[in-house]
Image (cartoon, rainbow, N blue to C red):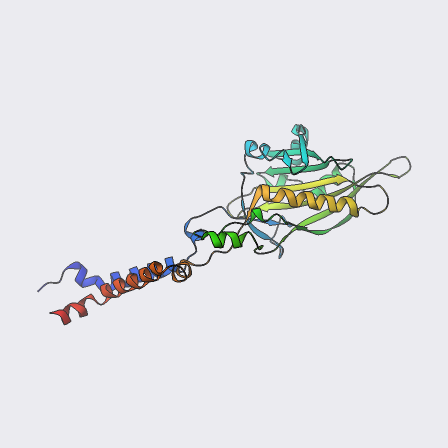
Length: 293
C-alpha cells in the first residue's frame, strides 16, 4: 500500500519543525521584534571598548525630530541659534544648536546635534576648532554618569514586579564615555588667552556597512581663561548626563524565550512540554502507527 506524503516524510518534517522551534526558543524577544540598535562611542572610524549599545528615541536624520528635542531639561531652558552657516562649515545635513541657561549659573551651556550623510565631508571637533582659530590645549576622555534610570529599557513581556526591579538597578554601565577637548583662542597681538572652552562629545553610530552617516552629540561651555576648569567641566558632564535619557534608551539583554516560558507560570511550562511531545509524535509517527495497528 502506497504511503501518503506525510507518512513518507513525517520524520524529516518533524525534525525541521523541531529545529525551527529550538531556534525560536533560544531567541530573545528583541531578536524577533526587531528594533533599530545603535551604539554610543568616542571613536568615529573604529569601535572602542567603551561603546554602549542603545536604541535611539529620536530620528537623528530628521530635522523635525531633532528640533523637537526638549527645550526644557530640568531647570535648564534653551534658545536656538541660526545654524545655516555653521551647517555648511561642518558639512551637516541635520543640525540643532541650542544654548541652555540655568537660573543659578551666569553662563549658558551650548548643545549641538549634528548629522552628516558623508563621512568624508564631516569635520570632527579636533579638526573643526583649529580651523576656527582655536588651539587644542588638551585632549582626553570623560565618563558621564547617567543617574536618571528612566532611560533603562523595560524587559519585554515583563511582569509588574520585573518592571519595578528594572527601575531600581542600572543594567550595563552607569556611565557613557565621551571625548574631552580643551581649546583656547589667543590674541594675535600679545598671545594672551582670550577664550577657553570645555568640549564634550560622542558619536551615535549605526551599522557602518549599511550607512555612511555620522551623528555627533556635543556639549560645550566657556571656561576660565586661567587656572582650573574643573568646575565648568563638572557642569557640562552633568548637563550631558541629563540630555542622554531624552535621546536614548539603554538596551537591556533579554532572556531567551525558553527561559521566559520555563520560569513563568505553569501554563508556559505545560505549553513547552506539549509542544515537544507533538513534535516527537510527528517524528516517530510511522513507529507509533505500527504499534497501534
